[in-house]
Image (cartoon, rainbow, N blue to C red):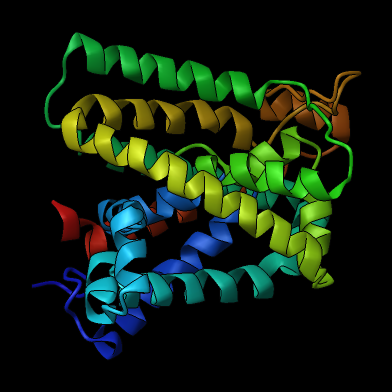
Length: 308
């Protein structure tokens, strides 16, 4: 059995591979346009993650109050979740300032790398659609249109208030566990991305706690729906998720216009971008796209077979 493939795998055996997956998910989740769910899928733990999250129900709560801790750890796949969350936390707290700085100083290069990641991820994901039908094709087109529409939508700015962190966490986490829909980009659309990132960098515990509470509620509610769809309508659901990835390529396309009156940017050609801003850094950007593409295929070849 492959590493990380069973809830009974000892924590020591789980740690290196699952921890690294968590680091990759955390790094993706703090970048607008990139999904931690995508990283979970291409590294072979997506179905297990959704199953583990969905296990938090009334039966599990009863086991907790009854003191049946062995059953609690087995049902919730606790070793797996704890190791993964540790990797995510380490990544978020260590990379938040780095990613924020790169978004300010080298946006073209950073977005190019993630464009390559997402393009390869879409190709990986579409290979998992075992049966194509009109419903699956419709899901693919809907997912692409929905993600593109979200990416080109004007920002709706929430006021900076305690309840805003809860609401932002609730909606962002639903996007974070979907391959192709970026929770960070949802925060951008809500006008909460710089506020949440600042709270993480400065360790504002109250704001972080409210965000985490909202995320927890959203995760428990949405994971059950997603788990049901993957279990009962596997191919159409994967096709829709692939569409999300394809549509999100518009979000991470490196060359865009400046935000307009409604805060919307539009993709343009590298040549036109160079005419507008002086340089498109085309050679470096293409090189980083290829690097991101290769990185995903290496991850897929190493870990992608765990859930097939």
